[in-house]
Image 1: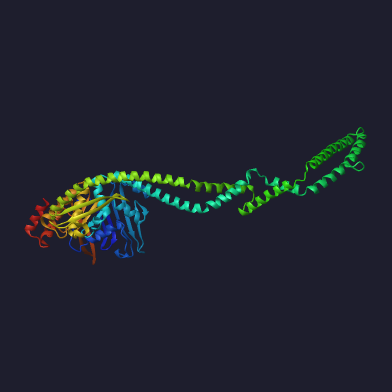
Image 2: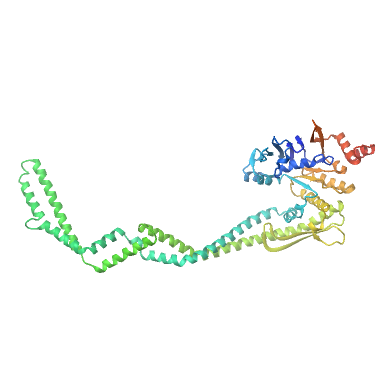
Amino acid sequence: MLTSLSIKNYALIDNLDVNFNNGLTIITGETGAGKSILLGGLSLILGKRADLSSIKDASKKCVIEAVFDVTNYNLKNIFKEEDLDYEEQTIIRREILPSSKSRAFINDSPVNLDSLKRLVEQLIDIHSQHQTLELVSNDFQYQVIDCLANNEKLLEDYTNELNDFKKLEKELQELIKFQAEAIKEHDYNSFLLNELTETELENINLQELEEEYETLDNIEDITEKLSYSNQLLNNEDIGLLKTLLELKNTIQKLSGFSTRYEALFNRIDSSLIELNDIQNEIELLKESLETNPGRLEEVNFQLQTLHNLMQKHVAQDVGELIEIRNKLNDKVLVTQNMEETIIQKNKDILETKAVLLNLSKNIHKNRKSAIPLLTKQLEDILKSLGIPNAKFNIELNNTDTFYKNGCDDLIFLFSANKGGNFNELKKAASGGELSRIMLAIKLILSNYVQLPTIMFDEIDSGVSGEIANRMADIMLQMSKTMQVFTITHLPQIAAKGHTHFKVFKEDIDDVTQTSLTKLNHDERVVEIAQMLSGIELSTSAIAHAKQLLN
């Protein structure tokens, strides 16, 4: 509920601070006194775009601040989703700066207008005779039906399933698109993969292969040089082994004279051992050599294949070729398994669709059951509001289409006259009739859910007498479960309020200002008497006013 409102530097309002109670609050005032200004200021709290021309003093900022008690509205999730501090006494503030920029705050946290609207639409609803678009909107009509049908949990489950269904369908379309593109590349990727697979990359050591090629390709030169090396070692006259052996024997004769000669001998002996080993290695290498043109051709082909593959795939070594082959393998497998994935995705869609259909059938069943109840209540209330022949024909047809709130097509048909034809509500009802239908619907809804604070802006225009009295009774009945404001010119309605405020203009220092004051009992008597008879108060008007208040 709205507990307080503060308006500073807005239109004809210089500084206004007012507190409100629960129940039915009446606001009256002469035409042009500034009731629309009050609503204009409040509309900024509702997220209306700010206008610099609304500032009273253009050199100062305009501030509108409202405090709401949100205890009973289950709004913690909205606060959490908008990253706002939850306070049971929530403060909403709009500021219009002299620069024409505007700012909005919820509990002192800056917010954009979308976030502001999302919260405030749960807190207050301003309704006038000319604001009936909500009533004729299909979304609102569904909300009314579903409220009486107790479909809240079913619709929550349906929404979750519908989101999953749409997500699955989107994924399926992406898979089909991907499959179509992948098929185009599949043959080429398979060819590249086979090329790399047939090469058996894991079994190839490029360095060893290159060394083998160099050996086979130069075998004659290698054999010749190994033979010559062997000759240098084993020549009977000047061979290194024979010469070194003679050197060893000579030094051995000196080793007994000094440890220095002995050390020299040991070094020569080690060199001889090493040289003998080298000679044996040369012999083995020479014996292992074998001219093999076939193997040379095979190795050459392998190397050429590897170099061609590395050039084709811009790879630096065999390891990179293996990585490329593995990626190609994944692509080919994905394409090959795509059909199974698509089949599974279709299966998931069918399962989700079955759940959706079941939920939609239950939603439809509940709506069907609620329609007669809603129709009877509406017609009974409208009869008391001066539309005795009001008839509703609410059509609900199940379809195969998954809408955001079920699979139903809903249409409110209305006839205001006996024997008249039914037509769509927006075509069949006048402005005054729509206003009373909305009042009836709000009354019905107030018995089922916690509605936001509602402010009726002269919806009683064009009615009088007993109908006005009945309108007042309806507002009073609604105020038992919610906070209700009504701006009215009718004394029958004004007398029903728990609290009564008057909007008036006054000149202060040659400046016209709009003010709002709370009336006590005696002041209410005078105000209602003036509403009955005008400025000149008569004894009968005073008596009638007192009678209405009592």
